[in-house]
Image 1 (tube, rainbow, N blue to C red):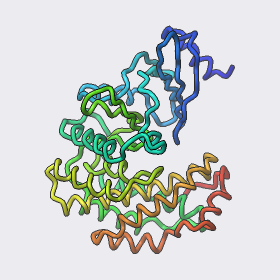
Image 2: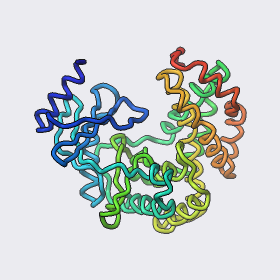
Image 3: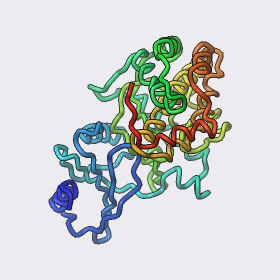
Image 4: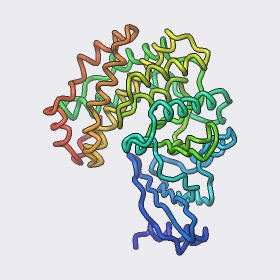
Length: 339
């Protein structure tokens, strides 16, 4: 038995779940893994987050406590071994928004309105202390992965990022660089669980928030409504951006500019991350999501305030044609030199 499996069994045994049946749950783009434990009519979820992989389980515990203090449905922490990277979590079930919507068992507007109301509630309260708080230049630099991996994967060349980063930083500074709030960062339908037996905001179960940091009010709303993994109807997106801005007391025009600027930054970063996941981690399924993200990028760049950024992206980023995506997939797991 590998050392990691032995450590996991030791943690489970110490928590009183040694005899539990274990079943792997779907993972994500990180190195974390999850198992559902069932024992004597009870269930729990084992999170295995190996130390040194970038996701600190202590951050999960910290943010979960903050969310639960606000009356929101983050999983309760049943047991923890932070040094070895193990958590035993409350099992919130399998009713992911994405699964309900795919199976026709959920109403998109109802689910997404509830999730938007959670963001409004979250942002009305002070954030925990000690969280990362990037400036506009750092957010722009993070999006340069679009050049380093997406553009490189298609053309074999990494364009000089200087003009791209400077222009994006300027767009963010002018449109999306106001007072910060807590953002959960991966706030989308595969990390939200519908809990209809609970009341109010607690009906929305929250997962995958350990990378939470300070950011702009529109960031998690963009993550929710411009989902890289599923199409959200334009009618729902329009209605809920209006709902959010009105209930946040934000003026519509500046908010729409901020939403577009953040949406462009996020889409650019995702293009690079998805290409990198294929090229470095051998996960070609992410390449098949790129056309949706590209479409979201183009919609954001159509905002008049982002004209300069649009011109640079048109110049530096090839469109994701089938042939272009085939070039990225052809590099799958090749791990070329990183620029």
